[in-house]
Image (tube, rainbow, N blue to C red):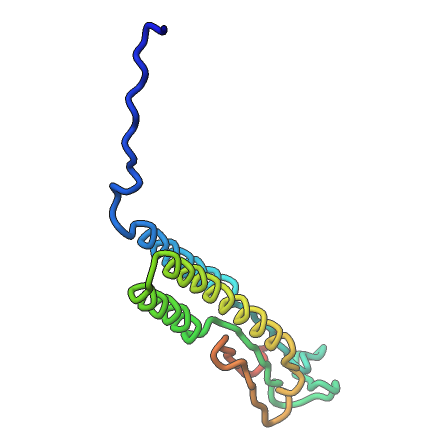
Length: 171
């Protein structure tokens, strides 16, 4: 026989918590991951490139792409890639639809599965937007902008490409 009494059995506290607490934690996790996806999208969705056909000759005058002297400064083109508001709206819709489905879920397991799929969906949306926009941006040939007419077809809802043309500045 031991001199200390045996410990009293501990009550089961798993059932004493808030009903649906696991789902609330899942919703919080979804919101945090959606916020992280938005921040990653904002920070990684940037790029720029530029092109100036021609330059400046030894006398300080302008030359065109073929090396001939010209009176006017050649036009320089710069492209900038930036985030699109449609991706943020897509993330928000994924979150709102998931929360709506969780409210109608038949059991806790179905609700958690819905939340997990929403996390994966928002991450996939950001990954696709980043890859497609950056690849599309890098495939735009800048030499086409030296002619008089041009257009940029971008992956519309995934990224925004700003085009700026301005004359080359002197030395």
